[in-house]
Image (cartoon, rainbow, N blue to C red; front, side, top):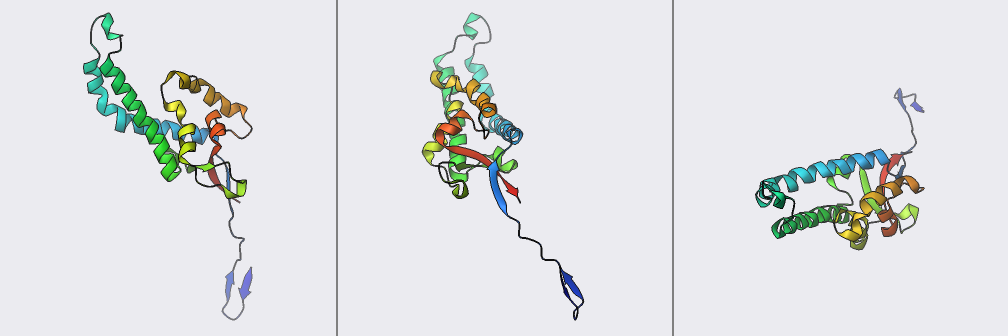
Length: 171
């Protein structure tokens, strides 16, 4: 504390806050992902509910058989969802859900003190689980389990893409 006797003022000299980037908590990541799903449901899927209901016949066994129109619509929506995650993470380093929880994606291939932007390839690889294509369907189950098995809480695709979801900690 610095005291100026002539002006009778006291000023505390506190240490400067230091920011530290560390792995994001699993709970924050889960909540951010759930928020992204709500946003996608409202902005992308909800407008197509009426169209999907018209494509699927309402009666009979044929209701379960996918039609070409339905498949094209579902794959088109899947691509939109995939692009949502890829483009937000590539351009802004975070999706709207991650923004709400103060999380962002960094390039883990660089030194820990020099985390940088992810590349487009990293953004694509880390979000392959959003594609409902046979080779990637197993990732819906394996990828989340990997979070609990890895030492720093990374998903398998994050490990493969050498990216990491982080949050800022003040020291």
